[in-house]
Length: 206
Image (cartoon, rainbow, N blue to C red; front, side, top):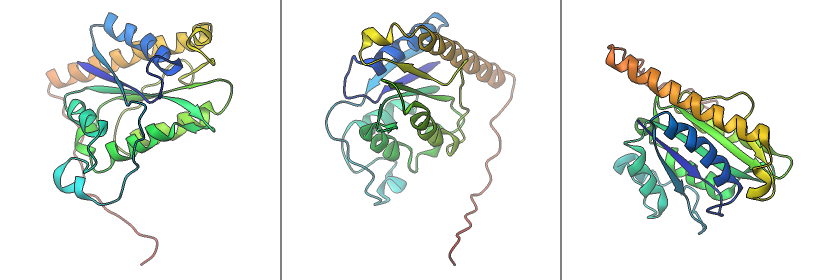
């Protein structure tokens, strides 16, 4: 079992990373393989709406999105972490996830996921809600914790003082490991994913 933890901050070892490493320790303790994937600090293009990925499975823009998608094929679960920028997930992570998720349902379907946000003070719940929408439109079980998955602090040192936030991260890691083990046990006992219906689209303007 493997979980990819995506660091959506431009800072490779900043506050978001601090939260993700707290989760990672619990996952490793439960025997789950992990990888922290940093999206980088270079500009990330938004989706161009060209539709080429629907034909090839790859984005025509050659950057970390395609690198991530290759890794995602073999992953069993995901944690997406982001700093809060103007009460939203970072622009870079939003562009990254728009392109990673569009037309890639087969990669993510039925794999557990969770969002983690890091903020100085406010805007955390709006960002948390924004990220969860990627999972709920992709048939991904959403993993919860004892509170909304957020940490507070302006520096990694301040995040480490958010004892409740760190506890929330640890419980999230254990809950993710538990759900992955439940899914694996189900597979071993012949439980298969739900049958997917042929998509139906109802447009509002005809």
